[in-house]
Image (cartoon, rainbow, N blue to C red; front, side, top):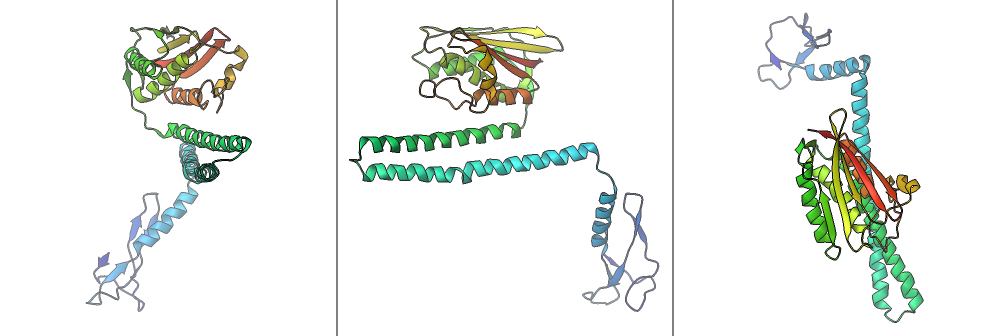
Length: 303
């Protein structure tokens, strides 16, 4: 900021009686000036207000106590930054060694075609384990990103959405006949359609997958109104089911009750579903009986 030579100066170029400027926090700053060495006329001065304001603002921030809301926001931002660092490490740093293990195991198999059967079995186990761990890391990466998606809450037609998902699941299991009994009069709920769809995909997919030993899979969707403006959606199947005391294990990371060779999957679907429902302000529960199927209940906000 250049100003004219309209105030008395000392021999060092400082202005006597320099004006004060309010900082916005109830205090004032005394402006200091010095002669400009680059001005052609030599009688102009350059203000060094920026550095003074920065230092004064820093002192003021240190003196003013941080509000609880600001403190929580700062902690949340720090937690998100740590989560992003973790996600990057899982996506890149940890998966590179697995690619090397799988690649060199493949090279050994190609360079040693007449290896003993026992050695070939061990090598196949190494490759399968590396591929499984890579899939698990990818699953953890996707799980960690669920909380970062921007919500788009709006009225959602659950009946139409469930019908769309059911058709998609049926196409995935063409060898499994399914009798769908999906309520069409489900009231609209307030949710993010994309996130709610992910939950329905997981629950309906499980219902059909774990009914594969039935000649005809039966999947039912019903609903009822709850107090407080909420809606309860229930999905039942008549599949394998599980022992009631094992229900808590299904919401744990990599929680599986059946062998992977019989029922493919990582054991992350219900974990992700619970996280998604919590983001939507809802809840999800699961009950079951061994050999009689299971029942998944979701509580959501009614539109």
